[in-house]
Length: 494
Image (cartoon, rainbow, N blue to C red):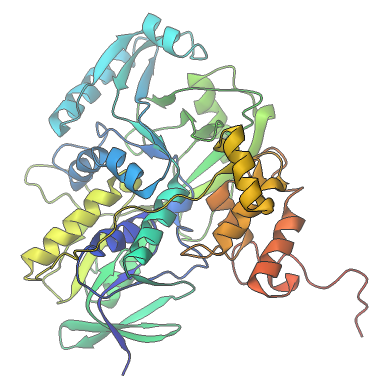
């Protein structure tokens, strides 16, 4: 007989981890499976790191409802999970007189969605708030509830809190099929064996269409990967302190220029519909498009200050909005479908999916209750995820005390970001152990400075091998197939 759970969550991105975290409040046995070597390696690993205010989605859509409901949750959630979050607000910037009327349309749309505090500011005020802005600015829409976050920390912290509360997480565990008893799901097949369940939650991101089709649900639904490319700029060369959106197009919020919690400026994304769900290539033409968009907002930005480029994929679906009278064909799917029992189906969770994740998790709980699931709260549920020390953020006296307790905190491994050996070791032995270089990078921000890991990588490989008790040859960048080393130096084959 396979191991059996009340709920199996398929997918360890921001949405899946939030679903597991909120469900862990109840007396349920829960398993979360993720096909990659770490949590949050899909769409949740490459995005704009924005908590959206909620004026962009069309009124009446699930996107609008989930966005605005979740936006209000982030202050409390960031405090409980001890993750970085700043409610800096954001701007939609009109350049030239022709774009100015579009701000009024966005303002009205935001008000219909229930976004508080929005108003339009003058060109003069915008130039005062962001000195780097294009001098041809004609005005801007100001949304004070917008924010910036660390998207890696969101997935990891939610998953760790779920583990604290009894959830089991299996990495490198790929969904293959459902086990059916008539029209009821009674389990799943994976590359690591079968698992029984009463409920399966499809939070598979880019592969959510594949998962739902295995259950015979929504055969017409298709996810088209939408690639977005980004540039990260050296914070020593340029600092933009605000979140700056252009006036949006019909398919995208546009190429933004935004501050980050780590002090860098990010440019992107563009929007390219592609077929390959694993194609995260950065293209010459795409980078050109990025800089055209960036210079429209901030002409002084220079490609010479770029320290890294990357691309992410959004799970753009073709589901119509189910609110009568709303003509929109790229809405979220959040449902318990009638065709099959035991499935909670989440699909097309593109932007603002990261923002919406906690509200989607609460909606999953509502759906389970509506389906007759009697959810009993645990009296000992712990919503607080304990923080781990971040050496560079500590006052000098606290740094000295930490080094006295553990001398490894006095050994700097990443000089650009001031990450210590003590922090690396703590992440290797965390509730969800960091077992690859990129897993350490996502948790500590090591390797993200201007040297891009050139100095720290050999030392991190050594620490990982020592702490995991394996050969350095087994250490990978992001999982099997990405090993750093092939043999010891000077080893002669044959």
